View 1 (cartoon, rainbow, N blue to C red):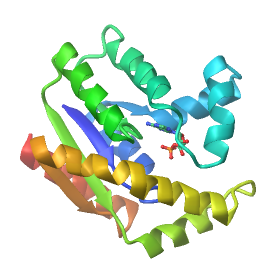
View 2 (cartoon, rainbow, N blue to C red):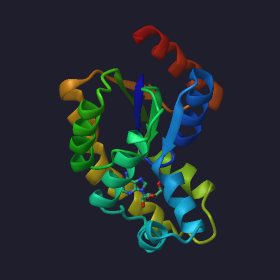
View 3 (spheres, helix red, strand yellow):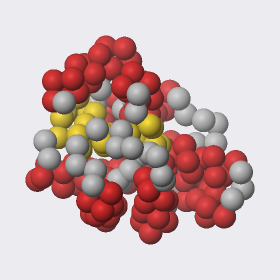
Length: 185
Ligand code: AMP
């Protein structure tokens, strides 16, 4: 099973992805985590990504597509994983389609976690790191609505996209997701 998890910043994608991966024994790929690790390790990728991420912008499609293509091509991966934070643009979604067809991954499930914009703003401000200004948070949300929201429409054409209401406790939402996944697999 290849799960693609979509949803705006602050909706709980990362937390839910970790829980789903643990419970269903899937590998969890978070592009945000990979980039943060690269920054910490001061690799070439980290140096490229640092300023872009700090401003709430997106790292270039070419860099991200290369990164995820390498991650998914690793030997021994099998076909069970959850992608968290990728794809974030239509170009990335198209590239992922080619990667999946090349690697013969054809059990794709798209989850879309939703929440109202005001709720997201409240949550993001609540967990704001001291170096994040309100401006940067607004920027992240704007980038999401402009560049990432269309990815959901893209998948709606060829896949069943499962909408999950992201309001509620972490456990409640997770139980809902696991139940839905059990039903569709
Ligand atoms: P996240 O932890 O998923 O919110 O990602 C943190 C930041 O990493 C984002 O705000 C982007 O700057 C960058 N990033 C993560 N995934 C991608 C992606 N697929 N495409 C472009 N930038 C990304």
